[in-house]
Image (tube, rainbow, N blue to C red; front, side, top):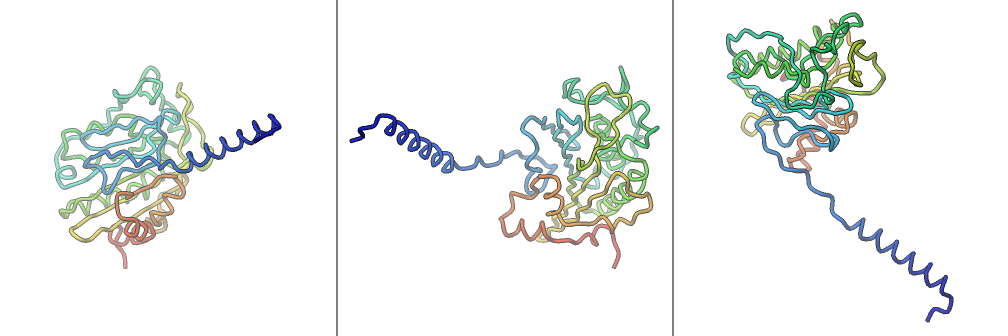
Length: 276
């Protein structure tokens, strides 16, 4: 029997707190949401903010960040059907019709990219327009949710080269899955005339996967905004694990843990970029 009421209350309070702690620890982590799409292989990039908008279109899927105004990741599958064609690919920029005006940049009233070239930025596709010459949905790549401010030397240098290598392999009859997105590791100059608050990426990552029967191959790259135009592509090849560490995203999480770990720590981009 407890003779001191205060002590009893204190003891009861601690017991309740410990019980609450035990209950909290015992709760299992909710499994990732199962979302099925042709645009990713063994799971979508996991770990983007819950406030993001997930958009799945005919030629790509993306996770649009309401605060930064750019996609945290874009995923797409490429086959010869998308790559090979004679469509006239015009860069007709449009605001994403599936996003609110305050969630994305816009090409008019005002043009948020006006003056961007004065500080070195091009409009950089994450899912590249040039990879969809065979798709009647190619114009979807011109929505500004799929665009980021990208330094011209990077866009027209190694970033363009890796896109070209992807298309070469797909034209050989292969199917490739691509995941790509921005890095935010240092402050960058903002677009001078954008009327929405936004954050310009400091760099970019790209993961390319090929699943050909029993063989699963991956290549991963990180490139900074100030990458030189003539920078060799092999200098930017890294492990998938390094992309995960720097983005906070998780890739290929539907694979068994041991297979996922081995894949994430593999560094083999030769199959994609060529070389000895």
